Amino acid sequence: MTTAPATDRPVRRPPRPVVLLRPVPGTSAVHELWAGTKLIVVFGISVLLTFYPGWVPIGLVAAVVLTGARIAHIPRGALPSVPPWLWILVAIGGITAALAGGSPLIDVGGVSLGLGGLLNFLRITALSIVLLGLGAMISWTTNVAEIAPAVATLGRPLRLLRIPVDEWAVTLAIALRAFPMLIDEFRVLYAARRSRPKIVPRTRRARRKRHALELIDLLATAIAVTLRRADEMGDAITARGGTGQISAVPSRPKLADWLTLAIISALCGAAVAIEVALGA
Image 1 (cartoon, rainbow, N blue to C red):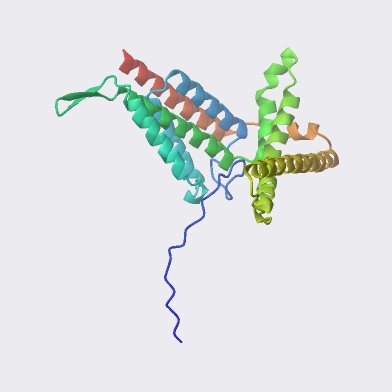
Image 2 (cartoon, rainbow, N blue to C red):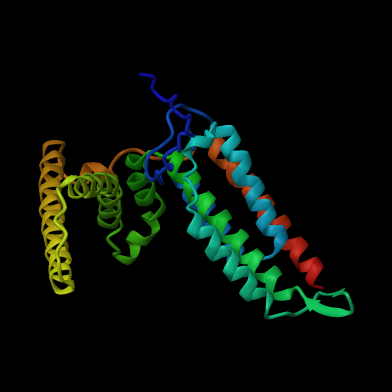
């Protein structure tokens, strides 16, 4: 008895998940920068793109992000997989924006077509991608423990106004540390739910009731897991000296940080000058 040869089927690679708030292993000049410097750079670039969202600033910021990724040795595997439905939404948005028309105009077979709406859509899409890349760079090159001391140092002048900067920094640090842990816990809960045997109800009312009960169970379990994680984190913080130790770590800029700020300031100034010159 002969068996049929097995057909070689292409192995489908699993999608790469979104990895946030976890620095890429290794060290580089970008990794060693002060966390406050990175926050200032993100704030300055965000202000620049808010008031001057043109192609020139977007291109300069994209060059900064790509250069930083090159220096930090960010692998391609760190980029998440783009789901197909997102490409479909982008295509629908581009087609809808193209219907708005506007200058510049092109003639195709005697018909005048306006590309203004499509160009605006592409510019907004490029702006969103650049900002997401900038945030991802901070996430991939910055340790979460360095954020709170940097925020406390940057917000020191606000203490004169009796603003609780240290408490805000501690809250931000705890939230950033808890976010990845909760994501992992919710993934485990979702996997456990999918591994349970499924009982298909016969009626539509029974299916709705079953979905409602499953949602209630998931919410109750998620709240219980969150409270357990919060209790464990509270015990760990108390054992290490309390919340005051989170923002009390020495955090100061160095020569490389001042040089980075000078380069970014020069690029932002050049982008503003070019935009003003083109608009005049």
